[in-house]
Length: 221
Image (tube, rainbow, N blue to C red; front, top):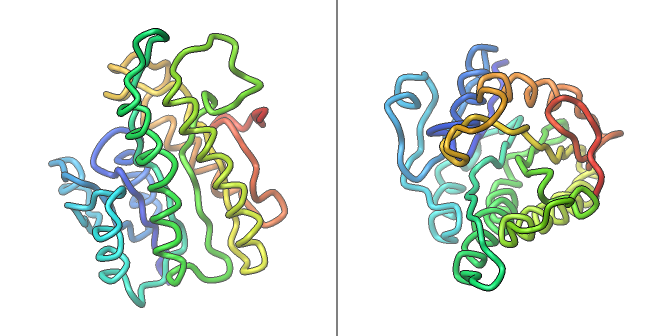
């Protein structure tokens, strides 16, 4: 039976690369995005566009559209990145990063719980910038705070969903050449997606809740 993955932020970057990777492995992929792209439309994925993951009504409508559909893998990938400078912090930007990076993945996960049966997996694409121990350079207040909050939520989900047989991975994709960082990364989105796919394949109930770099390294909290 063909497995099904749901991937948010699937229209570009890591989300698009993950979509293409799972399609190449024979999965059915449902790509979720606010605005689709020619690359996503041409990928062969089922595309559900117009979904703002911070909008409760939009996420509820998505859940209704997927009602009765078994989902084997949910990848919460959608996110935003802003840079704040101490002394001139944009607090609305920080709030927006919390909504998109931390609250929205929890909202999507809760909305789709009925689609996830025992043996399903959930992956949260976070960042090592959400690690408190790993923060050696400061700055990036909203992004760091929102990703730390995401990590906390994902760990709670790992605990709460383990009795249901659902495993959770908390994954740093690496420094990836995407529009989010003006393509200044050191690995391609395709390479990151391959690594992330392997980390997800290695995910079990026994190691659920782990915080990993896409290269397999365990990251500090």
